[in-house]
Length: 171
Image 1: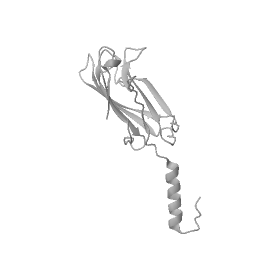
Image 2: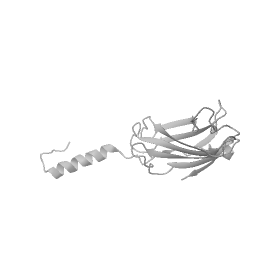
Image 3: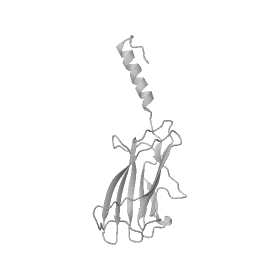
């Protein structure tokens, strides 16, 4: 700790540098991008006739990212057999510690079409729904997009739910 018997500016500068060094910088927290497996993606859920979003958030930085430092914004637009245009926006908090260099959180079969009412015509069912969605990695406290590569993707899919029909574009 700084010896605060010295001048005030020295003490303030020392404490400021200590705070900066302890705060850590997570410029390398991002979505895992796998080209051969098309990840992230939207595919039919095995035990359901609905579509689900799949992605992984990884930490390649030198610092741990504490729980609830990040959240994922999911903005989906799609059409179903009962509704031409559906829109859903949800947020998924990253509630686990992302350990430096190796930390990851895997989200599988996330139902982005959360029903709003009984009989909701915007349930995204296999063979009846196609569309697109954006996933964006955000700082949980400010809502600002995380800096770096692979922090925002556009994903589109077709009714049949085949992996070959999934198109993923980095934004």
